[in-house]
Length: 590
Image (tube, rainbow, N blue to C red; front, side, top):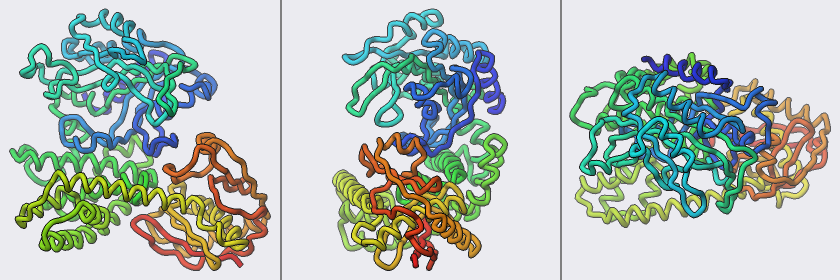
């Protein structure tokens, strides 16, 4: 069965069960507590907590989707049988409609009747209960209709509890369905059950019984309704249906991996793992770039940069052709372009983002290797220096360790890793402090001219998004008595026509003499109202939202004029690159 057939069978099955298909949401999460979409249920959070009515918006309380997801929690496991960063999640949802019995029955029917998977190879697990939440008696009884008691295994919160997807939100106990890949118990014998580390089983489908709301202190309270949220890895189901030993040998990956030179059946497992990492990370990079994410040192841009740099390091290790990434990107677009139109329509932008980052990183890497060699020649290396090499040149810690071994330099690997982590934490603290400065915009000490320039940055931000696209994100700003400086995400130089259009748009809004208003509200309420916010690690619980007429709305803490007519004439003085994927505009008002 092809992956395309599996997609269609899943959606058709749940439509027959009265569900309505909803489209995949963006990978860039709208939830302020998380950076990326990690599950199909994230876009439904307002419905689960009772803020929105699914019947009003969708005409039903039963929904189904195939959601694009991106997770970095298992990034070090990529290359094994089943872990991925980018993947698609098959899901069915009930918001105050059916609950445990129907959810379990639907899952069992789909797997055993529709997909015709051997019942003997499916093992359910349930929540064992703890001092916060009771044992899941109901699921235990329901599962006995389908499998013998001795195949129903119980696990604690770490295995059989899901959510919330951020710091707060909907959550609940879950029942997982595991697939017996090998059918052979390990040396544990009868104790070799789902979640055994031997690799005999893979988790296939997670049925989450979402009935609680977790607050910031970790306390639980009942949701307005009992809900069902299920998630099944599409790649894993495809692996099972195509009888493959790993997701990387399915028709979702095989066309990509076969384009990478070298014997895929080589006994050198490290080469095979490297190819799998390239294929997985590049899929994720393509989808992030398709949504306008560009490599940077913060938020989604940092994740994109991280996976692209890992790809390039693996590519260098395998000594692959320099133009291979272009070929692989085009293959990925060929595989997904008809399913996700944004991937096909943004092909040129995707290629530009990936090629630009590759050029910049390779230059940095060459310098970094020389610098690392020089440092090691002088003797021991500290965690602070190792982090500097990583942050500045992309040299990973394991690469430094390998070079040290080659040069015969003895290092305390355990201590080096601890010191490296400490240096990383210190860097994060500095980054947060920097975000605080960006949040205020640097205008507080600039007097009346500062108010004019700071308000102009809001107009500039919105105008850039109007002219260049919604991928534009503020990356920093600075204001003094003479000019404003505004950094923003964008992969290429602005044309003269684009700069003129930005200028004209801003001056038109100044001419309209729009009123600047402010109000205080909860951060979550502000983002839901449409206010722009790009420094998630900084904002307090209560924020100020500044609106410039109906044109601009942004969370901010800096000083502003009361009407745009006070600003004067806006003029762009320069526009150039600030860093990889980030442009910088300097402008004045007269």
